[in-house]
Image (spheres, rainbow, N blue to C red):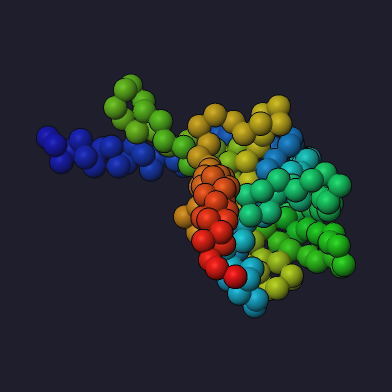
Length: 212
């Protein structure tokens, strides 16, 4: 009996994934404000490795044949907000298939522009049907994938999240780059800032005790 329940659960999960993907195809729209985060895992220049970047973009698409288009700007670097006066624009254009999104972008910079490409797929959210049977649903508000930029030949992981009134929706985990999140970086910066006065006091005492 247990074996039957096991195989029935697996079969139900497979059918639910296929049915949900088909059912939600017409609902798969990209219109709205998105945050795109990237984490560089490999690059020609080692200083780019482990670098986090983020953009805020507005995407629009047509459910029939028009391409996906979008405009935005780079808003974060190494999990730190970029001042508005120092932000550079990005323009995106791409295509959407039944279960994937491809975006090519032109990224303006201080000295020159570069190009890049994102490859995304919808994530899968797990829900419980009748309290205990798993039901998997395609989440088109959180896209996972990869990126490749001409700048430094940088490549790595990427995530796009559709924002709600300009804010990250509830239940979305913080983006991590090489195991670090924005909270980790902030905590480390605060620890350094807190330790600075102590170091300065020790240096002052050492200087006072050291004879000329």
